[in-house]
Image (tube, rainbow, N blue to C red; front, top):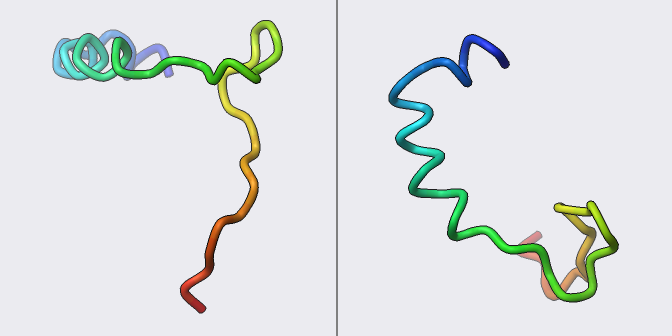
Length: 43
């Protein structure tokens, strides 16, 4: 992870992507990813 975090291209990509991510209002403090209800399946 440290090697990837030190990579300039990765840092550039993160600078674009991270501002687009926002925790849901229903997320607990410090919780970034939460499980969602299944809506449909393609199987």
